Image 1 (spheres, rainbow, N blue to C red):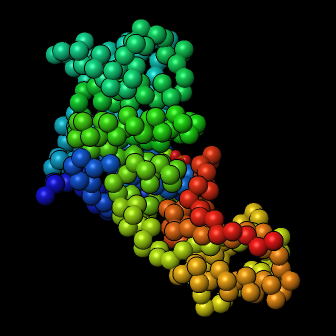
Image 2 (cartoon, protein in one colour):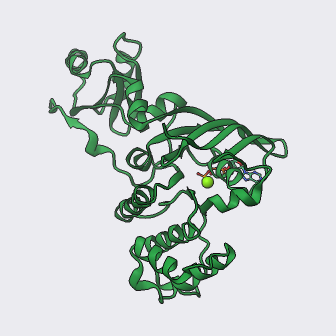
Length: 327
Ligand SMILES: Nc1ncnc2c1ncn2[C@@H]1O[C@H](COP(=O)(O)OP(=O)(O)OP(=O)(O)O)[C@@H](O)[C@H]1O
Ligand SMILES: [Mg+2]
């Protein structure tokens, strides 16, 4: 059985009278990619900053490979690599110089040159060693920061919003490097994200965090399965009328308006769609399209919190199965 790399118990952080992290507990197994998924201000950065020893805690305990992080900070730091949410490279220096500076900070002396060239290779920047960072794209900078976080061979790497603000293709490219680090070096990775797709694709397990609390933990699959049933989308220009007609019916687990119709969570979509069509027909409501899909992590988040997580750019339409429309 894999041992635990991290054990966090009843962790609390208060800023004055405001509680940013409100009693968080979770365990991460060695070699796992563990995601903290939550909206802006949920407490993700505050949580990992405490684990990574860069922020003091109010109460609770943190163990990293058996080391009490709050007592033995220096020992814990050697086990940890961190990539901050806000970029922290020196633009005027070259990629090599940035890594060399970090290697000195962590007293990496033996094989330093080889280690630096290996990690640059690892993130696909082997031929960019002598280029100034200010000439790099956003994705290249992010890859260099990931390489830097790994240079002293930590056992746990913290990635705070590793793909924030990057385009979808660059984001996928970064995921590949994160996976590679995880697989080839059996590196335990904790990442924070508010991209549902990122958590779904990359993480072995996810903790959904909101208002400083973990509201559910599980594998992406288990979280989606826990919701059960299907999500049915109906396109119509009379969504308010149809909403009133459907809300409260026994087959409707939840219903909400979308930009061009309704989204209904239900046990068995294929049986419910004809019923909805009938209701619409007898009330002179035209249906433009009907689709259904298995629940996504987004649906899980909505059902747990009652609201959308803010998600930029990600297009979830690909998951929808078309059922043909009635015109
Ligand atoms: N130094 C601080 N002083 C006071 N409040 C703070 C401080 N740092 C964070 N907070 C507050 O704590 C809460 C959690 O912040 P945190 O940065 O952990 O959120 P987050 O989940 O990382 O959000 P984001 O997705 O925007 O990065 C927020 O309400 C934030 O305003
Ligand atoms: Mg943050």
